[in-house]
Image 1: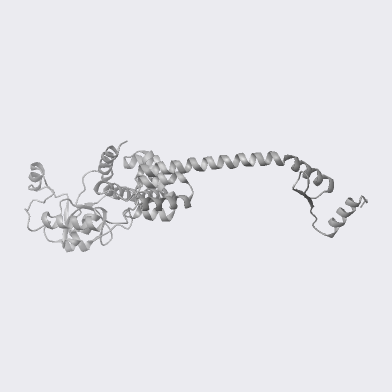
Image 2 (image 1 turned 90 degrees about the vertical axis):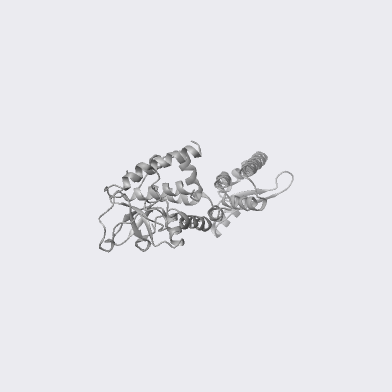
Length: 334
């Protein structure tokens, strides 16, 4: 499945997870004022995210609005948000856009005890704060699905808006797999992606901490990281990752370098195995003699050298065993 196809599948996944249109709960006591549809006061009374005539006509009828306006102070971030690193420059860009055009799309929240918790839209929430907005439009989820739905919504929403850091995505996948005892197949189906893609992302958790940090900081890409995993040993991965940074290697260059390193390691292992086999073959007669001495004296025996000259070691563990050896060597019965 291509990246474009997976992204399209994720779009369907979000719609399915959101479960259709959200409805608006009855206003709280401190929300007695009529619902406003203007996010930016300088704009039209028709909300900026109503973009077609049918939607505009529906907004002018008496039917209840699918969204409401909430003060930013009533909204809290989701502690299970999979994104841990936010690109501040892009948040500033989004903030400038909001200042100019208003918040084009409402965020999705769920009513908690005393606040509204974000399900999807934390980047927009942060940018709205930076833009100086006091209130924003939201869609409030009233149903009470399993917590897993909110967790999945957060992942899908982040993928759709702006690609999550690959390591953040792997951590989010791993958390859901463990928290809800999901199989990789089931989670992939829920998210609308292939199981292979999900499994490859999860493999990034096997990277050593130094390399994980490089991925978090976008110093190396997911492609680089996947190539490094073929090395298996942590110290080799770290060494290669530093070389990638120093030499500005592409993913293709990294894959080739890793392949060459593995071939070199395989050749070295083959040479060592051959050398050991030759040494073992040469030492076979000595080993046979050592075994004969062991049986004769009832103790460990080691022959050093061999051929024309060398030494023999016989081991004892206490005075009694030494006396026994001496008697045997003198040809005296013990």
